[in-house]
Image 1 (cartoon, protein in one colour):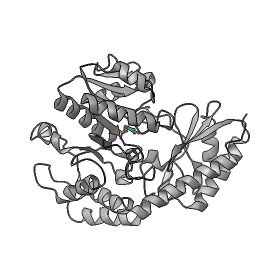
Image 2 (tube, helix red, strand yellow):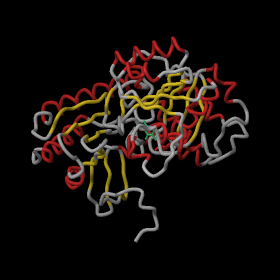
Image 3 (spheres, helix red, strand yellow):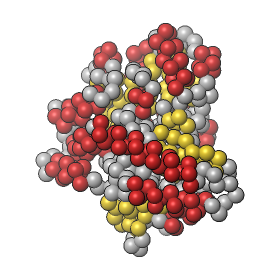
Length: 381
Ligand SMILES: *Cc1c(COP(=O)(O)O)cnc(C)c1O
């Protein structure tokens, strides 16, 4: 019996405690967590520095309204803008809210109604972000969608050119499509896209909710591509387990989001900010990011060697510690088998096993996980 809406089909697992990459269930069985929630516990579970920061803030105050100054918000905003092309941050509580803010800002700034997004994208579950999402399964039964969005095939620059008209105000994309199947953007596509957006005065919005905060080995994934987006959104890994979202934009848009234009009662909650500040102070360091890059390469190489040649596996793809094992059939039977063996992983669409281990994962944890995946996948054809 449950009084919770059945919006999630849940696996047979109830967690009793967790620390680092390790999760323990109510029966005392332990698991390696290679999903980190869904890319949320970026520094693993209860990272000591993050826990300390949260506990310290709990002793001071938990909430004050955004009607007052909140210095810890200023600190987190500064850390974010020091590490990307943006100048101002709007804080909220989730990824969808960050994208909502981005969509509202883009409309207000440009005065135009149309935003181009991509097939297989995922931008959230609120009305605007569901409408932005180029996947029918997310939208079924909720129509009509907002008319603002036009979906084109990902990595297809001709399709973008074709879709642009004089009402196009922005293009919004993920640098590695997450929910859509761990599909990285092509460098040439992104380069062309940047050129067209510049030429036609179209805003570039990058949804870094899954790819940001060090996940791919850079502070933000768009930095692999040498672009300076007009608007960036972040959430998932930002609080390493506490709910927090951020919309980061260039200073010329400050006026469009002046007093009274947009808001959030809970946005920038001081306890969430304490977590985010501790996370960014750890993640936004060159040494830390290059370790993430190295560990990502190591994981990729191990998967290439031990898994890519299994009959059920098509290929491995991804960036940094965001990796997809693309399979030749439905991966849903494998996930419970991996759970039984003590490894938590995610899927990304029907055919892709998605790995989002904590950025603090160790090589020996990677070795263990790869061996368990090999054991399970070897039985499938
Ligand atoms: C998870 C995700 C979202 C939505 O975030 P929520 O916190 O669930 O609202 C949006 N965009 C991308 C790329 C995501 O991965």
